[in-house]
Length: 261
Image (cartoon, rainbow, N blue to C red; front, side, top):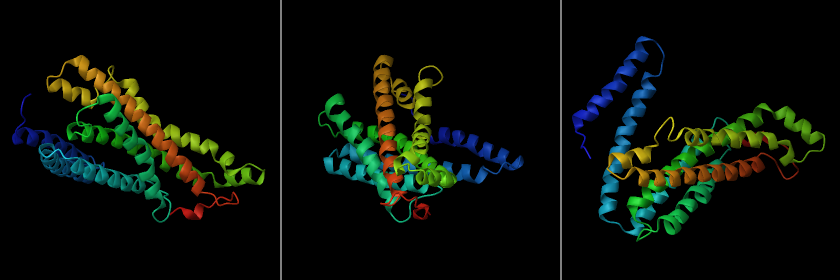
């Protein structure tokens, strides 16, 4: 595999800088956010590269467990921060964390033990990238689902309360909003699955091919990943949406939007 130099990365970064300049010249207003995101990408990936290099050289289960815990905690924070109307206090954070633990973490664990069957099963070369891909996609799905749920609950306050007055239960009155929230959360992964192999080559498959892996082996691993992340995103969204929907009502089935910030 061809090794990239610092100069190669600088040339790639110049494309982003050129786009930022174009934004300024056309008064589009996204230059600052683009440059900050690019800088964060470079710093964060450089840092994780150093961490992974250390962990790969010291492949002990407690290092893998520590990185897993940090990834889950940070993902829970990201899910909660991406919502316009979030639950007050730490409820939203713990719901996101529980949803990702019961979906991404659990499914990745089962995949490592029963499907990949590497020895040891927690080998960081497999466990960390697999969890990272699964967790990242599930995080996006859960965040989109919860944002859709709370936004539509606020917008449809009168409709929900009318249904409650007509004798509908809390679950029945918010059912359509929950369905829409799940649909929104699954749009990215469904689009990725539909386009895979026809419009785009997924990242893991592309990386393996560039590294010289047999294309058919790369395809099999990519299919496994796509199924895994779709299941994680769907299961995580279901868990998060249903728990959050319960939180929006009190024990007497009254809508309590004051629980949202």
